[in-house]
Every structure is written in C-alpha cells, then in structure tokens.
Amino acid sequence: MSSNDSRSFIGQRAPVTARPSPLFVGSDIYRNPAFGFNHPLNIVRHAAVLDLLGMLGWLDQADFRESNPASIEQLLRFHDHAYVRALQYANATGSVAPDVRERYRVGTFENPLFPGFFERASMTVGGSILAAELAAAGHVVFHPTGGTHHGRSDRAAGFCYLNDPVFAVMTLLRLGFERILYLDLDAHHGDGVEEAFYEEPRVTTASIHEKDRWPYSGTHSHAHAGAFNFSVPPELNDSEFDYLVQNAVLPLFETKGADALVICCGADCLAGDPLSKMKLTNVALWDVVDRLIALNVPTVVLGGGGYNPWTVTRYWTGMWARISGQEMPENLPPEACEFMGQMKCDLIEEEDIKQEWLTTMADCPYPGPIRDEIKSMVEYTQSQF
Image (cartoon, rainbow, N blue to C red; front, side, top):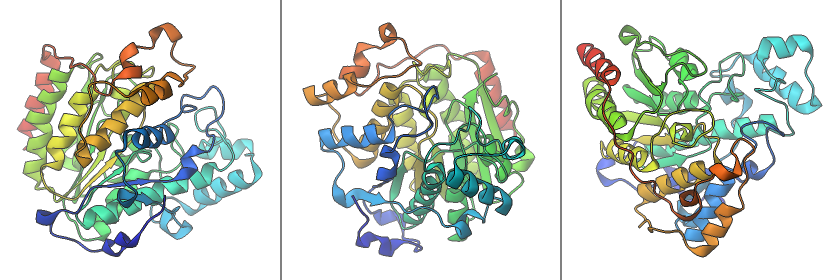
C-alpha cells in the first residue's frame, strides 16, 4: 500500500465540522523480524492487524497511508545528537561498546540490537509525525505501531528506542495547536511523554496505568506541571475504568479546553496480557476512544504495549472498525479463525489461550465494584480543576 494525493492536506488545519474519512498509517517494515528470540515483543502485532483487516474487508486502499521514516533533522528536534549517532552506529555495525550500552541503554535484553532496528524506530516516528499532520487536516488517524512512550531524549527505555508520541504532540504544536491533551491508556506509565512536556503549559498529560508496575513512576499527579496520573490497583475492571474517564479524564479535557488529542492505546491493559494484571475488555477501551473522538477535535490514536498477540490483534483491529464505522460480527469468519489459531506466544501457555480469542472480536464486558482507591483519585483530580 502507498500514500496518495490526500497528502495535500498536510500542514493545513481543516474545520472539524466537515471531518474527512479516518485514516490508517502503517508500513510493511513492521513485517520484518524484530527484537529477537525470548523478547516480549517477538510476536506478530502490526502485520497481524493488517492481515485480519484484509480478511474482514475493513481497510480500503484509499484509507491507508504509508509512512516514511523520520529524517535525522526531524529526530534531532527531540533526541540528542550524540544519542542518535550512537543508534546509527549500533544499527550499522550490529554491536555496541560496554560504555555505549551503559550510557544509552541499547544492546541490552530490554532494548536489543536487531537488523534494521533504527530504520524501524525512525519509521514509527515518521508515522506519528504523518498522523499528526493528517489529524490537523481533520482526519481521525490510527497509527497502531506508534506508542513508544518510554523513550527519552538521550536513551532507550522499555523497548522504546525513540519516542514517537512526543513527535505527534510536537507536530501538533508546530501546526499551531495550543492546548493538547495526551492520554495514555497503556498498562505502564507514559513516563517519557510526561517528562518531555513537564511544565509545558500547552500540553496536559494524563496516564491511567497499573500501580507497582514498571517503570514504577506516575504514582502521583503534578497538577502544577500539567501531569495527571491514575496509578490504579491490579484487576481494574470496566466499571472503574469508565468511572475514571467520565469523572476525571473528560472533565480534564473540558477544563483545559484541549484543541487536539493524542491517545496511546497500549493493549497490555487488557485481561490476559502476560505483563500486567489489569482486566479491561477491548469493548470498554473502544467505547472510551469513541467518546473522545466524539469531542470533535483533531485526534491521533496510537498503539503502545501489548504482549498477547491474540488480544492485541483483536483490540487494534476492532479499534479501526470502530473508528471507520464497520459492522462487527459476533463471530469471526472461518478464514480469520484459522489465522488467529496459528499465532504463537512464548509467554502464554497453550492451555491459557481462550477460545474466544480465536473466534470473536469483542470481549464480554467485565463490570465490577468501584473501589475507594479509584474514587479518591477522581476526587483529587476534581479538586485541581
């Protein structure tokens, strides 16, 4: 797939009252092997979403945009020059010296070297820049491979070599938006984005993530700096999630008067993910994104974490279905069921693979009581308005 003439929209702010069709940003580069054996991200994700969308007939050629890698000049708008050079050298040679590994956290188990890692990371940044440009023209844009929210200006972190959400926000700022809300729904705190825009008056960051989970930050909000954190207890249910969004996130959007949104939709907050203990359903997450899109401001929807290939694929495929107005079947067609049945994941035992992951798109809702801890977070946030 390739881009087409709609790129003429880029850099122009269109009235959102006549919103153009939603767009999907991606690249075939994500079909290449990545991260190596025994790494949590050595699973199918982006390619599986594209393949399943193709089987279901939910992604038209006209709605797909092929991204380009970010240029070095673009990367240096956030990332340090010495760090970018170190990444380029490691990518070219396939090795890092011990001091480089220690300084930049590259070449570790967490952030391994693999062929083409720099091109892949640069493509993800380029995709988020493009997504923000298209959103500024009025499109709702889905870039599921985006969401590398842990990367720092001068080092890698948490499987993230660069930080593409930062570039999505920076692009919107460059195009003249002045009140941007970044909402992070990944199970892990969006620490890299919060740090990048801490005390930046034009950007408000909000993160709903699991308590006592790596990177062990985001335990408190810093309203003075525009950073709001909801460090939730394990087994967060759909009712609690909806309560947080209705009573804290949406009022925050209204109070700040946000004129653009960037949403990080990590799939590791879903029940069944091996790297978190949250128990959200994809339906609850789709509903929230629907509600945010309905606010009718330029919106970029990114991916993020997610280490269960079945739940990731269903979530992001269904996300595009919701965004683009597709009718979701109760059961997947046979071809799609066979496709889902062929997936593998070393982190999930075969007996723990749920049948509904292979045969359906939507999870059964998981309501539950709203714990006092959740109510206290909402009360604190409301006191800051």
